[in-house]
Image 1: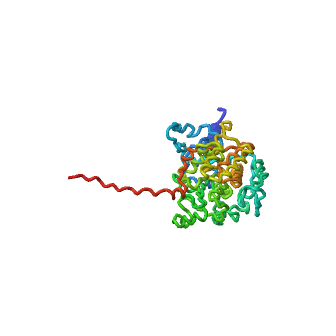
Image 2 (image 1 turned 120 degrees about the vertical axis):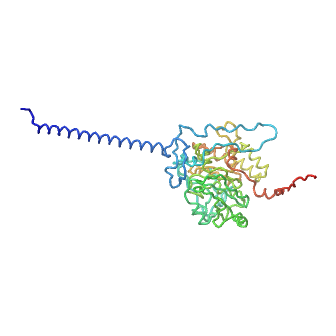
Image 3 (image 1 turned 180 degrees about the horizontal axis):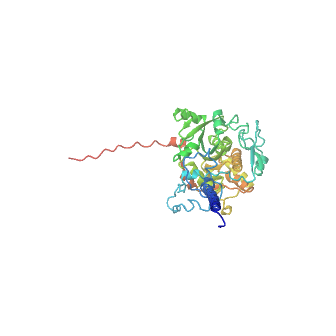
Length: 471
């Protein structure tokens, strides 16, 4: 008799088959699970390596991305790139040889990445503000002059002790910074702005461009080569007084929306000073007070025309340099004492006031510029363009610079280095002072209106008759 019957053989066969089937199912399940893990891991790696937030270079292109609403994805973290920058190998041509007829200031070539690349390079996080983290401002409804020299009802009358204390940089500070008569800059403080415009100035923006014309002193210049992204996201604010407003209206420049081309016109009333140029220092140096919710600003004087996209300017002079404040140095003068003498010779300001200011700074330790001050490259800026990030330390610098302009002469080139050096002695912070020829690359300078009015009109073209030939 066989040890097992045919029925028992079937049972064994079925058991083996079922066992093999279950193993196959288990193997299939394991393989499927492994594939899912592999696919998920690949997707995660791809997402991290292609995301613009973590990209290692500044040269990725983006199209039609709204910076304000997608700020978390359209920006870069402040990390050192190991791949370099597209402009690292660029070097400007050498200056023209000396001798012969002196060549005046000229623009020089500047390397910019594309506007789209520059826009994608907006840092996600703000620059560090060394030591200072909280900055507030004095309010005084009835400012009283307690010392014989300096100050105004608009800027207050800080004593010399208060002035000196303002250079002792601490984590929390309160300083004079214009607009002392009210809680809101631009509202019953002098330099007053209509309520609708004040509300507009409170809007949040990554980047703005600002300028001013007071006393009908300049002819408004329209920016050129501005990208569509900048036209959409970057406001252009032009501050003017009522005299200039009247000229714009009579000339039919101003439309019903208070715009002239790209410029949004902001009319200022109850201007604090009789000197139009001094009034222009208010938006120039105190822009962070008028626009409290802006990250980056480009200031250009009213006589200048911007001819490079704002994102490219910021990327070249701030973001690429890891700087929070940038200004060009004077094309020829590096020394404050020489600048003072040049101002006196040109009749820029009352000579005795200039002498008083320079003597004051000399007693505080101001010395002529020399190579011993390197890496500081100049003590004299060409102050018609200011590029900055609005953080506490740069806001403090702007306030203290304005206070010097309010206390002494309106020639801000004379006070710049004194404020800068006092701050740099206290904190690890510096200013990017780039070449003046680089500034002339992205702005074109026009004549002031009074000089244009004195110039003779251009000669009418001479109609030339075609030559006749004798038959």
